[in-house]
Image (cartoon, rainbow over all chains, first blue to last red; front, side):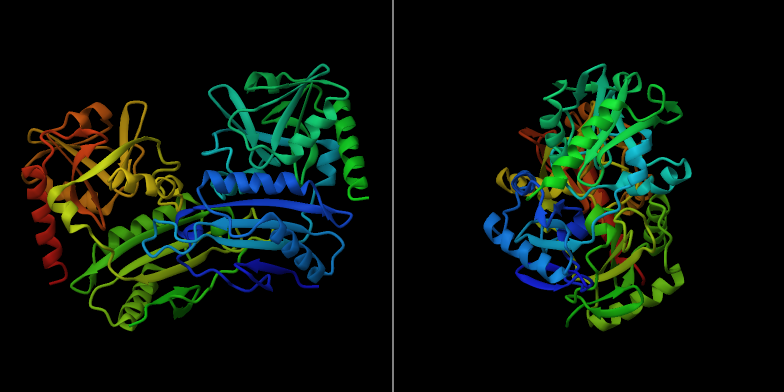
Length: 276
Length: 276
């Protein structure tokens, strides 16, 4: 069944153009987004995603044109119209139409219904390779639409049979292009808290990990990840994904670690029960 | 008369939505642009602007869907349809529609016809105030659509009665948000060549200045601009614009400098003759 999208109060087919071309998101990169999905038909950690979306909007000084309650109704309508059991939603809030191409007048809000993203089941089992990349995201705590380096490097990643970039700068690691990072040193789990987007999956994994491991939330050095016993990344689409190679170097013995797979199973059990 | 825009082979009214919402320019900030205008009905330094546009596209690995010759015909049509003697053109090239929201398949090309921008005639005579801002543009040699800091700071600039931001980092200055910078030390004119976009107006001003001044093209320190005898900025819309105040500090005696105004007159004479 075709998907639909919401744009400034109206629901239209997903392939219908809606933006006039003087939108600040398009002309000036002034936009933010969020992305989440349902499990068992129920949006996962909706309050967390909404709060993050609100936080991004506040930091870019964009007033939200809808309340959380109004948005829930929109999501329910879009979900029902899709005819699918499970869907993903993408929010995009931009600076809106700007007569002078500089000043925000009224933001534009788009909510797209999307098919569930491919979640790389092979990568979850065997682990992925990442390429080290010297970069730190601008305004990292805002989920801006700026993913220029990810798109720019997409072909090079393919060529090197790598799944993602590992951002590092001045000896410190922060994130992958769209996901947070964790490393095990024995039974101690460390995860960066500087120059990162606060991932919702990251938060869930920290909650789960605290039952079985010591968790340290603090800046993480590049050296710590290349010498880690296990290394993994988390996101809405990746869940808990082992990282087994950084450039030419295997992480530990180059296989997905047992502690990582333990957390992955716990996460899978959590989402399997979601909404039930 | 209403303006029109070209999008992927078709010319439609300027306010007509044309992009589907999975364009990488909108969703991932993967886009570049250029902006130029006519004088006496003739696009100013068209070859220079086209070359810069080509260069930006090459650096973002986006194949151009049109040749320079084809584009000239499109510009002529858009200009004629506008019914205006003078127009501005904005090119926007984005990563196009991406089913996976990551990989470029086919770029989208938009060419907007726009009214001539307000060019702040008061600022040209009296000079403008800028606010120092610690930042360096990402991929500075590419005219990407990323102007997040400019939009984010727009209200603060108004509040402080300032016209623009002066980007500096590690003791070096690079640009204003959309324009290049020059400083006079006596009869020596210096302009930055690092972390900048190669402005077409900058190039023209360097050509003009060589007749009367010693021109040094090299990195410029923050200290050099705050201690300069004269300071100015150049762009397609600003022409040669004196900068007379940086934050709370006046530049020299706080008035537009004579050498700057000399170059400004020369630029004005050049564009007044353009195409004749």
